[in-house]
Length: 556
Image (cartoon, rainbow, N blue to C red; front, side, top):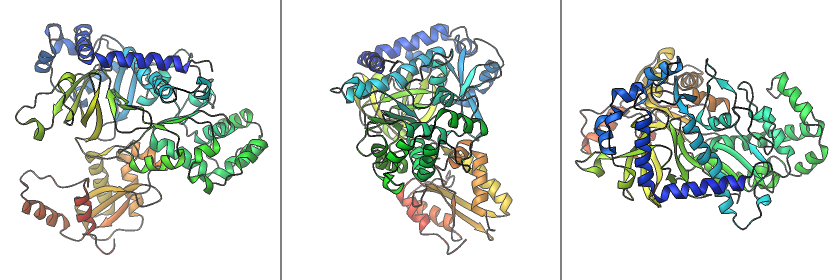
């Protein structure tokens, strides 16, 4: 190993402990520094950063914001204007879904990227080292199977762009200096010049590596999907390994076919070794059967991805799964409290300035956002975030619950998004996207829809959306395929999950006439105020699911 992972991890964990032990001081100093550095920006002058002297005054002077408040500023930055949101120039633009499925751009500065590198990259190895504290380092760290790839994509002016999870690697390799020698796939595969599905290529390199030590991904659905792919294509992969070829049915460009053939000569011995297992044998304990020296799997899972987390635990057996970070395009917020645990994250005092808006039912008459040093265990809050990259008092829409403290830093679990979404595999389909898809579907099908609602359906081979729709008329053949296409157009992340076979085609279930009226009558009878009732769209409780399941008509 060229990279000293244990040293990287030890340094990152020491920094974590130091910042958490004095989180209140770190938070106040961070805000003071952000306001001072950015006082002469367009945004800083507008809100008088130069004269803000306390966190309380910051709350009074600077409004809570959302992405729409930044769109015009970010476009000015993309056009080359400096000192708009931050004195520091953007080094990277995260691309993610906006409220209508269109791309939105979130700038990241070098400062932000450096902090993410410490906590979302180096600290991972520190937690692994602590988990295996009595083991020799050479038995813990070694070759890594990286599920994701980090395409070298840029804005028109050459500034790097892409998804948040890829930014650290692109940034670390900005001058070609990232050491990829400890990854089982070559650097060309990790950093392709353009986006292409290279899962076959990565699987071939990973299967050829007998001494694999770790599997790295971001979300558990993508890692479980890679294991599914290997199991489904087991015979083809072993045959290609034996002959050194690439099966004609593999959807791979000629360039990558030639690359695989050149890089991976025939290996009949390894093919025979792996061939002792059949694809069906791999369903349980797959990773240990293929790579007995793997020490951990890096994948964010838990209650947000219940179906894929359970699938991944079948594949991993007793290998720990590290749900390493709580993050979004806007920032990295927390680090997993421990290895092989889920849904508990230490909020990181250095990554940005946090505010916490108490939920109405818990706050009484006081809805002032609280600071990190004011939180109480067991309470739920909406998260506001000020980043190193030009977002100020940004409304994340996340509701979190404080489950404890690590030093002075709160340990939180993610509860739900304030604005409801359906999220099976990280696609985060919100109500506006669902509305757009259903409206397009109704127009194309010539239907009059009285109402619809949607929930996740985990009963099939793949998780999928189940739409309960109350409509007049009859559906033509292929209705579910058309609805699927509409969803793909409304949310490009949903489309990506469909292309990667992480989500199945949606199912439509027809509701009896009057179903939504009966549900509203039920709410009214229970004492609900119906004057501002906007209709039910996402079924997020068992009571709602059971009611609409009971209203299904006999046929489409």
